[in-house]
Image (cartoon, rainbow, N blue to C red; front, side, top):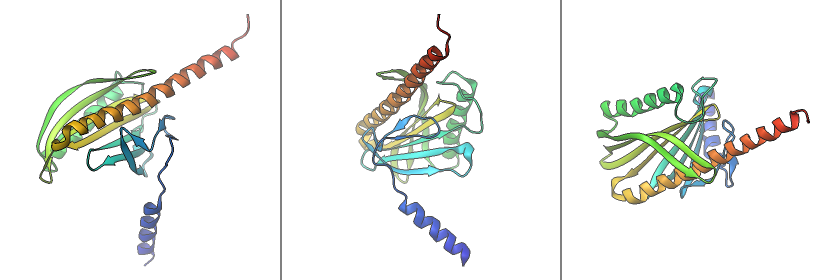
Length: 209
């Protein structure tokens, strides 16, 4: 009986969790996230019990696209900015293999990897590079497109998975581009702030003369 009560209580607390209605600071990276990104509203936040898995944020409009943002360190103490480190490259391959494995296990039908590339998103503070793979597949009778992207930000992996129906591919691809634009702007503005703060701090601590 006690176990049932605990499960029910957990479900009630999860259902009552209030999602932010204003921009908020993401605790692992320090970047600012918004309750709407790329026109997609935030519908769920998940804090994983294993600290290595970090947190995820789910943004979704059922008529357009769904984008999940995962922020985690995988138990690694140092993850370089951007996409050039072995840690980021290896983590992307793991994520990519997870998608391919889901296809081979039958979770997706007719899974095809369309392209793997470096995707550069411009913002007012500079560019953010992601490693990206694009896929097409069928699930639950619907043809879909999906994007997998990953980069390193402030000693964390930032992974994005966006999916949309083939029948709304123009709107879906546009929403993905806008989502990445919003995310990249916040990543670079945070990095620019940190960089300027470090310069100011160095100047304040340096002896005059």
